[in-house]
Image (cartoon, rainbow, N blue to C red):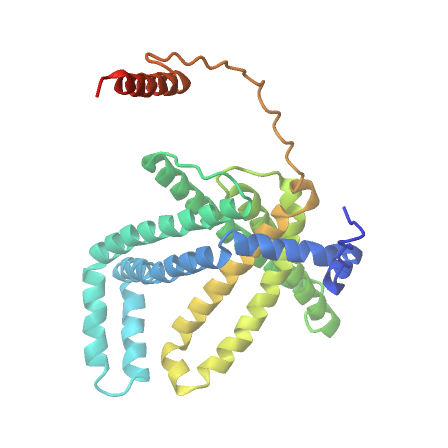
Length: 342
């Protein structure tokens, strides 16, 4: 309470803005939650496992390509012909044997790449789930290692199926709309193509919203309600599209330099993974700091008071009695000394 000696502190401009603008107060509370819950540290760990997963995924891709080429000799001949025609003279004698070796070792390349991809993928999913749980301020859980690895692996497969399914549905819907325009004779109309692009953008937003909704509500160790994550998922879907457009401009700028020509793709992947991870965690913090999720917990009632009487039992004299006895002994000694004949 303010007193005459200690006047009340006047609210700052930021405090007044937070009171008048609820959305600004929500954003600042989300930023505070993100910082206090070590959002950048978790985003760095997720980025590390994202880049680590790239090499084994490339190996898995080479293994699959080896299986396809070994079962399709005509396609293999077309590949050799294309290499011989498009590369400088002499390089085909170096690259074609490499392709032959890759096809011959397709089993080992695919198997080793799959094992490493599973390891890095489970590590990526485990860090992502821990980071999301931390933003929701959930108490740390320590399940058994086999159980945790199994759940993280199943969640990884579920997320992969959701991503593939959403993009497949979006592509199929856009292709169906384009075919429909051709059937009705509107494929050459500018307004029809514009409406088709708008439809594709809306379908992409819908797919992103469903993925963000599942990530925010179901990937934490303890599931949260869909209602709490629905608005945050919409913010995540729109923001992710903006992030992709910004990263495309950034990559075009980086690839124009000589250094970017060599390392631009890897640098771009790391930057995109880091900012995408930070954005996902911030959106989760935004959902966790909604008013319905920030209700104050009731203070627990203390237990009944227990009164214990302390009884001290001493085996010897008290301090006062000991002082009295000592004084009596000194007095008796003085009296004996005075009465002794000189």
